Length: 97
Image (cartoon, rainbow, N blue to C red; front, side):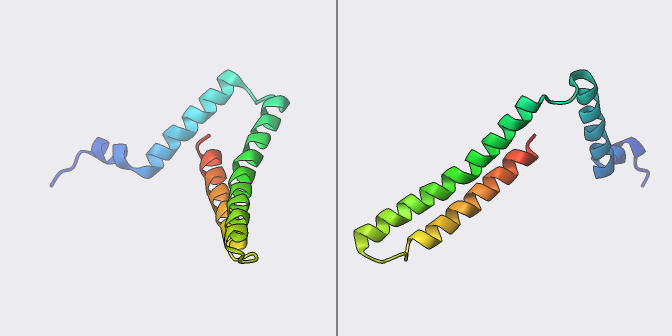
């Protein structure tokens, strides 16, 4: 029942997180901070990632409402679905960096 401690440390989430943090720090030391222009570009991309699905849901909902004469029956839920998709996509994009 003797387990090799090196096998345990390879699967330990704390050790993996420390390795990831060290890699991020080394990258920061090599490349430095991002420029203001790059940060503004990221904010702009994040805005488009959020806005495009919202507007697409609203556009498609308005089209369905006009086609079936249903008021805002489709517009509101499809816009909300677009907000959710945009939020999820933005969250995934932010956490992948």
